[in-house]
Image (cartoon, rainbow, N blue to C red; front, top):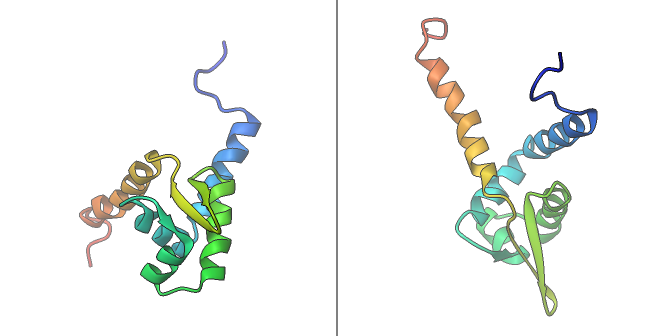
Length: 108
């Protein structure tokens, strides 16, 4: 009998790649900045007190992973969240340590 919800090798690789992309703190900061709406690279860099080249590099990785959309307007590039589910994923991951912090195993 075939088990339900078994992921294909291709799906597993895609999921692992997405988690690797999300494992970089600066990328999470960028996503957080974009939560309020579309922004240019310079707006994101200013909000994070980061260089434009650093932010562009991280945005490229986020874009390749399908997490942000890119729109060109003249010489500017604007980014927005491609899949808002990423925020739910972050809530689930970030909520877990809070839950475990109340367990008897982590009390100091």
